Length: 168
Length: 443
Image 1: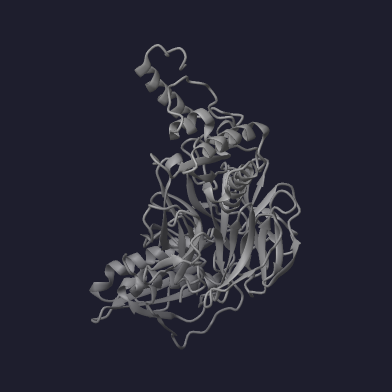
Image 2: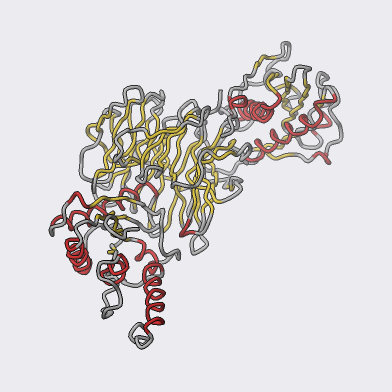
């Protein structure tokens, strides 16, 4: 969609935001790769928006699993490369689970997922003291249907960037 | 925060009327745990007599609470007042048993209410076996502050229930739960406290932080729960008299969940989340000293003490999907007790000590079930999209849990169900409600 409207700079930016907003809140990135498109010159590379939409701020998990898939590793590789370019940044890894488990078990399961991400990031060279983890269990679903199409988006670990200039 | 201490500590003087013989020593109804059909006992509860003019409304209100308590058990059937052919006008006169027999009342409750000039409330009642034409137990009188009238009504119902079934009552008890508002992807949660029947609701926290899974201390004066008030899931302790709340563990980065008190109230057992590992710890409330009870690398969570304090049941995914295990309260070797298909979660030891209630997930369905301590005689009492987090009535005969509907408008409500799977009822709450925990009978 963003290429179709690339001729209108303002409109393209607006559509991109709306489109990516849907990517965050309405699904997409089903294999855990997040947004991987190229938008030449549209977004400042150091921005949080770039991190969230161009690199992809999340990875997804299989049912009851905390294993990082190969597709997820590519996203996390890009996240870590970006973070190593902006060393003032820190990250919080938010772990989440779908609704198909009990509340307290899912809290621990989501900690396991977030920790998997943390461990992978450290293994490829991000300093451990730049990473913290918050498990949310099934408390914060993004998608609210009760079907695998939504649950697959909710079984996620989201890398929330903090610290540094322009952090929000 | 409103302090209801006056109601909490309302004291009851209780004594028996002399002179009335006890009619029987066998219960009128025996609660059949084998799952057979129980025919509810027809009971007549004519209006309680107001012994002075200030007591009229309370007399009606108290009788209504007594009736609601008994009917909600599914063990009693109310004979409507329109069927009565005689009225009770004198509490001290012997009932016209024949008049109650022809309307098929098996049990008859008579009551009288009066107020004193210093604001005290006096509630008296008698219970009769209509067929035997004799009282069941002695008459009972309660005296307390008028604002505690609901508790007195529950005490009356507890005594009636107990005399007819031979089981301890459970109506004078409270529920702490999570009140939920808002859409599924922006749920706001508050800690809420109410009587077991939904009355006297009050909120204990605002909705600024996620709160989860509150549990009462044995004397129901404290509540322990998980809160994100510090940004991370941490166990908090709240005193219900003062409203004061604080993190149980002072280390700012601790991540703790799934707390429960020991039966003597001196310790808390909970889960500590450390990276991908979750283990069970015991915290001494006086010294705040921690003892680690499990050490494997799996998720060990939702511990619950046996009523004698000697053992702990918990769930662990050490062999894959969560299963139930029992270990000594000092830790050490754990024995797996669940063996069926699916996963087993949130075990809770019965206050009678003989059963474990749990949440089972199998083939995408959730069940609340019970099993013996050795895992035998598993009985699934409910089934739905999500049925979760059972909590026992103080007498171990009823379970509350929450049921969450599926889909984009899915939301939780609290339900109760008999230990036999009968008498499924929604517990009345003003909004969405989850994570109920049932107190002991109040003192």
